[in-house]
Amino acid sequence: MRTFPDREALASALAEEVAEALRNAIGDGGEATLAVSGGSTPKLFFHALSKAELDWESVTVTLVDERWVPDTEERSNARLVQEHLLWNEAARARFVPLFIDANSPEGALPEVQQRVADLSGPLTVAVLGMGDDGHTASFFPGGDRLEDAIDPTGKALVLPMRAKAAIEPRITLTLPVLLAAKKLVLHVEGEAKKRVLDEALAGDDPLQMPIRAVIRNAREPLEVAWAP
Image (cartoon, rainbow, N blue to C red):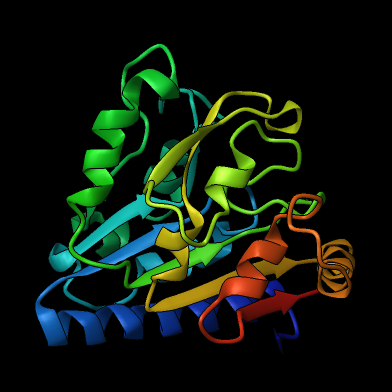
Protein backbone atom coordinates (compact mmCIF):
# COMPACT_ATOMS: atom_id res chain seq x y z
CA MET A 1 0.00 0.00 0.00
CA ARG A 2 1.22 3.44 -0.92
CA THR A 3 0.18 6.28 1.37
CA PHE A 4 -0.17 9.86 0.17
CA PRO A 5 -0.31 12.96 2.39
CA ASP A 6 -3.69 14.04 1.04
CA ARG A 7 -6.26 13.21 -1.60
CA GLU A 8 -4.99 15.79 -4.06
CA ALA A 9 -1.52 14.24 -4.00
CA LEU A 10 -3.01 10.78 -4.50
CA ALA A 11 -5.14 11.95 -7.43
CA SER A 12 -2.19 13.61 -9.15
CA ALA A 13 0.18 10.66 -8.72
CA LEU A 14 -2.39 8.03 -9.68
CA ALA A 15 -3.43 10.03 -12.75
CA GLU A 16 0.16 10.24 -13.97
CA GLU A 17 0.75 6.51 -13.38
CA VAL A 18 -2.43 5.56 -15.24
CA ALA A 19 -1.60 7.95 -18.07
CA GLU A 20 1.86 6.44 -18.38
CA ALA A 21 0.40 2.91 -18.53
CA LEU A 22 -1.99 4.04 -21.27
CA ARG A 23 0.86 5.70 -23.20
CA ASN A 24 2.94 2.52 -23.00
CA ALA A 25 0.08 0.36 -24.23
CA ILE A 26 -0.58 2.72 -27.14
CA GLY A 27 3.10 2.66 -27.99
CA ASP A 28 3.18 -1.14 -27.92
CA GLY A 29 -0.10 -1.96 -29.66
CA GLY A 30 -1.69 1.23 -30.89
CA GLU A 31 -4.56 1.31 -28.39
CA ALA A 32 -5.37 1.10 -24.69
CA THR A 33 -8.37 0.37 -22.44
CA LEU A 34 -9.24 1.85 -19.07
CA ALA A 35 -11.96 0.62 -16.69
CA VAL A 36 -12.93 2.95 -13.85
CA SER A 37 -15.22 2.83 -10.85
CA GLY A 38 -18.05 5.07 -9.67
CA GLY A 39 -18.77 6.81 -6.39
CA SER A 40 -17.40 10.07 -5.04
CA THR A 41 -13.85 8.85 -4.35
CA PRO A 42 -12.49 9.02 -7.93
CA LYS A 43 -13.62 12.56 -8.81
CA LEU A 44 -10.29 14.27 -8.05
CA PHE A 45 -8.45 11.46 -9.85
CA PHE A 46 -10.76 11.83 -12.86
CA HIS A 47 -10.14 15.59 -13.01
CA ALA A 48 -6.37 15.08 -12.92
CA LEU A 49 -6.42 12.30 -15.50
CA SER A 50 -8.63 14.30 -17.86
CA LYS A 51 -5.76 16.76 -18.34
CA ALA A 52 -3.11 14.13 -19.15
CA GLU A 53 -1.39 14.58 -22.47
CA LEU A 54 -1.60 11.35 -24.43
CA ASP A 55 -3.24 10.02 -27.58
CA TRP A 56 -6.74 9.85 -26.14
CA GLU A 57 -8.22 8.92 -29.54
CA SER A 58 -6.54 5.55 -29.00
CA VAL A 59 -8.06 5.03 -25.54
CA THR A 60 -11.32 3.25 -24.79
CA VAL A 61 -12.84 4.01 -21.40
CA THR A 62 -15.39 1.72 -19.81
CA LEU A 63 -16.76 1.00 -16.35
CA VAL A 64 -15.91 -1.61 -13.75
CA ASP A 65 -19.62 -1.79 -12.93
CA GLU A 66 -22.85 0.13 -13.37
CA ARG A 67 -26.13 0.76 -11.61
CA TRP A 68 -29.02 -0.19 -13.90
CA VAL A 69 -30.12 3.41 -14.44
CA PRO A 70 -29.74 5.64 -17.54
CA ASP A 71 -27.10 8.35 -17.62
CA THR A 72 -29.77 10.96 -17.04
CA GLU A 73 -29.93 9.74 -13.43
CA GLU A 74 -27.67 11.19 -10.75
CA ARG A 75 -26.55 7.72 -9.56
CA SER A 76 -25.35 6.63 -13.01
CA ASN A 77 -21.64 5.79 -13.14
CA ALA A 78 -21.67 6.66 -16.83
CA ARG A 79 -22.87 10.15 -15.96
CA LEU A 80 -20.10 10.49 -13.37
CA VAL A 81 -17.47 9.57 -15.96
CA GLN A 82 -18.93 11.85 -18.60
CA GLU A 83 -19.02 14.81 -16.23
CA HIS A 84 -15.68 14.35 -14.46
CA LEU A 85 -13.34 12.37 -16.75
CA LEU A 86 -14.39 12.72 -20.38
CA TRP A 87 -13.55 16.38 -20.79
CA ASN A 88 -10.35 18.42 -21.25
CA GLU A 89 -7.88 16.17 -23.13
CA ALA A 90 -9.85 13.02 -22.28
CA ALA A 91 -12.90 14.24 -24.22
CA ARG A 92 -11.29 12.57 -27.25
CA ALA A 93 -11.48 9.07 -25.73
CA ARG A 94 -14.09 6.52 -26.80
CA PHE A 95 -16.55 5.57 -24.06
CA VAL A 96 -18.23 2.16 -23.83
CA PRO A 97 -21.03 2.19 -21.23
CA LEU A 98 -22.40 -0.94 -19.59
CA PHE A 99 -26.01 0.27 -19.43
CA ILE A 100 -28.32 -0.07 -22.41
CA ASP A 101 -32.01 0.78 -22.70
CA ALA A 102 -33.47 -2.48 -21.43
CA ASN A 103 -35.73 -3.32 -18.51
CA SER A 104 -33.10 -5.32 -16.63
CA PRO A 105 -29.41 -6.19 -16.71
CA GLU A 106 -30.40 -9.83 -17.24
CA GLY A 107 -32.25 -8.90 -20.43
CA ALA A 108 -29.31 -6.84 -21.68
CA LEU A 109 -26.63 -9.36 -20.76
CA PRO A 110 -25.83 -10.71 -24.27
CA GLU A 111 -25.34 -7.22 -25.70
CA VAL A 112 -23.27 -5.96 -22.77
CA GLN A 113 -21.18 -9.14 -22.83
CA GLN A 114 -20.46 -8.49 -26.51
CA ARG A 115 -19.45 -4.91 -25.79
CA VAL A 116 -16.87 -6.10 -23.30
CA ALA A 117 -15.71 -8.91 -25.60
CA ASP A 118 -15.12 -6.33 -28.34
CA LEU A 119 -12.62 -4.41 -26.22
CA SER A 120 -9.11 -4.96 -27.49
CA GLY A 121 -7.55 -7.69 -25.38
CA PRO A 122 -7.10 -7.49 -21.60
CA LEU A 123 -7.77 -4.17 -19.92
CA THR A 124 -4.73 -1.93 -19.82
CA VAL A 125 -5.73 -0.42 -16.48
CA ALA A 126 -8.55 -1.13 -14.03
CA VAL A 127 -9.06 1.19 -11.06
CA LEU A 128 -11.21 -0.27 -8.30
CA GLY A 129 -12.93 1.32 -5.34
CA MET A 130 -14.16 -0.29 -2.14
CA GLY A 131 -17.28 0.17 -0.01
CA ASP A 132 -17.60 0.18 3.75
CA ASP A 133 -18.89 -3.41 3.55
CA GLY A 134 -15.81 -4.62 1.68
CA HIS A 135 -17.48 -4.74 -1.73
CA THR A 136 -15.63 -3.80 -4.89
CA ALA A 137 -17.05 -3.53 -8.41
CA SER A 138 -20.60 -4.83 -7.81
CA PHE A 139 -19.34 -7.78 -5.78
CA PHE A 140 -21.70 -7.22 -2.84
CA PRO A 141 -21.93 -9.45 0.23
CA GLY A 142 -25.17 -11.37 -0.19
CA GLY A 143 -25.32 -10.64 -3.92
CA ASP A 144 -27.39 -13.12 -5.90
CA ARG A 145 -24.58 -13.83 -8.38
CA LEU A 146 -21.63 -13.16 -6.08
CA GLU A 147 -20.11 -16.63 -6.17
CA ASP A 148 -20.21 -16.66 -9.97
CA ALA A 149 -18.81 -13.13 -10.26
CA ILE A 150 -15.80 -13.78 -8.01
CA ASP A 151 -14.99 -17.23 -9.39
CA PRO A 152 -11.39 -16.84 -10.66
CA THR A 153 -12.00 -19.62 -13.19
CA GLY A 154 -15.34 -18.27 -14.41
CA LYS A 155 -15.90 -17.69 -18.13
CA ALA A 156 -18.45 -14.84 -17.98
CA LEU A 157 -17.14 -11.35 -18.75
CA VAL A 158 -20.03 -9.51 -17.11
CA LEU A 159 -22.82 -10.55 -14.78
CA PRO A 160 -25.94 -8.96 -13.30
CA MET A 161 -25.95 -8.45 -9.56
CA ARG A 162 -28.78 -7.83 -7.14
CA ALA A 163 -28.15 -7.18 -3.46
CA LYS A 164 -29.92 -5.30 -0.70
CA ALA A 165 -27.01 -2.88 -0.26
CA ALA A 166 -26.83 -2.19 -3.99
CA ILE A 167 -30.28 -0.50 -4.08
CA GLU A 168 -30.63 -0.78 -7.88
CA PRO A 169 -29.87 -3.88 -9.94
CA ARG A 170 -26.27 -3.75 -11.16
CA ILE A 171 -24.07 -5.12 -13.88
CA THR A 172 -20.40 -5.79 -13.25
CA LEU A 173 -17.21 -6.96 -14.86
CA THR A 174 -16.27 -10.31 -13.35
CA LEU A 175 -13.20 -11.11 -11.30
CA PRO A 176 -11.25 -12.79 -14.15
CA VAL A 177 -11.66 -9.71 -16.35
CA LEU A 178 -10.33 -7.47 -13.60
CA LEU A 179 -7.47 -9.80 -12.70
CA ALA A 180 -6.37 -9.87 -16.35
CA ALA A 181 -5.77 -6.10 -16.37
CA LYS A 182 -2.15 -5.18 -16.97
CA LYS A 183 -2.35 -2.64 -14.14
CA LEU A 184 -4.86 -3.18 -11.33
CA VAL A 185 -5.18 -0.55 -8.60
CA LEU A 186 -7.40 -0.21 -5.54
CA HIS A 187 -8.07 3.46 -4.77
CA VAL A 188 -9.29 4.10 -1.21
CA GLU A 189 -9.50 7.23 0.91
CA GLY A 190 -10.19 7.98 4.54
CA GLU A 191 -9.49 6.29 7.86
CA ALA A 192 -12.75 4.33 7.78
CA LYS A 193 -11.86 2.68 4.46
CA LYS A 194 -8.37 1.91 5.81
CA ARG A 195 -9.98 0.03 8.71
CA VAL A 196 -12.18 -1.89 6.26
CA LEU A 197 -9.12 -2.85 4.24
CA ASP A 198 -7.26 -3.96 7.36
CA GLU A 199 -10.23 -6.16 8.29
CA ALA A 200 -10.28 -7.63 4.79
CA LEU A 201 -6.58 -8.44 4.98
CA ALA A 202 -7.03 -10.11 8.36
CA GLY A 203 -9.73 -12.54 7.20
CA ASP A 204 -10.29 -15.14 4.50
CA ASP A 205 -13.95 -15.36 3.49
CA PRO A 206 -14.53 -13.51 0.18
CA LEU A 207 -18.30 -13.94 0.45
CA GLN A 208 -18.24 -11.86 3.61
CA MET A 209 -15.89 -9.19 2.20
CA PRO A 210 -15.56 -9.62 -1.57
CA ILE A 211 -12.49 -7.37 -1.90
CA ARG A 212 -10.69 -10.42 -0.52
CA ALA A 213 -11.34 -12.21 -3.81
CA VAL A 214 -9.26 -9.59 -5.59
CA ILE A 215 -6.53 -9.53 -2.96
CA ARG A 216 -6.21 -13.32 -2.82
CA ASN A 217 -6.28 -13.96 -6.57
CA ALA A 218 -4.31 -11.03 -8.01
CA ARG A 219 -1.35 -12.19 -10.10
CA GLU A 220 0.89 -9.79 -8.18
CA PRO A 221 0.32 -8.16 -4.78
CA LEU A 222 -2.59 -5.80 -5.26
CA GLU A 223 -1.52 -2.17 -5.62
CA VAL A 224 -3.37 0.05 -3.15
CA ALA A 225 -3.31 3.85 -3.23
CA TRP A 226 -4.59 5.45 -0.01
CA ALA A 227 -4.84 8.93 1.46
CA PRO A 228 -6.38 9.97 4.78
